[in-house]
Length: 101
Image 1 (cartoon, rainbow, N blue to C red):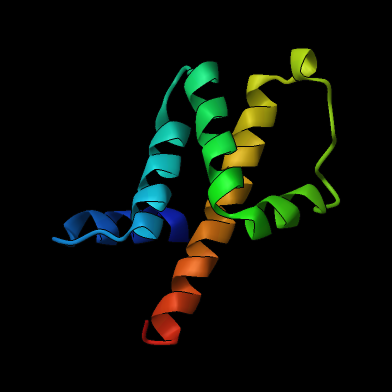
Image 2: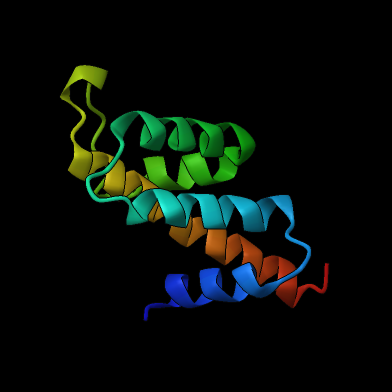
C-alpha cells in the first residue's frame, strides 16, 4: 500500500474527521472508481480547487501539467489531477499534524 492509501485507511478509523481529512478521503474514493465517473471526478477537482487555492497553484505549475480545453480532457488527465491533488492534500495534512493543530 502506498502512503496515500495508508493515510486514507488511518483517517477512516478516526471517529472525528476534519474537513481536510474528508477531502482526502473523498479524493481517494474518486481515484478508486473504475471506470472513472468523469462528472464526479471533475466536481471533486473543482471543489478541491476552490477550497485549496494553494494546491490548485501547486498542481498547475507542475512540469507535467498541461492546460487543455475542457472538451479535450481525458480520464487520464482527471486521474492525474486527482492524484496530484491527493498528494498535496496529504502533504497539507502531514504539516497540520506536525504542527499539532
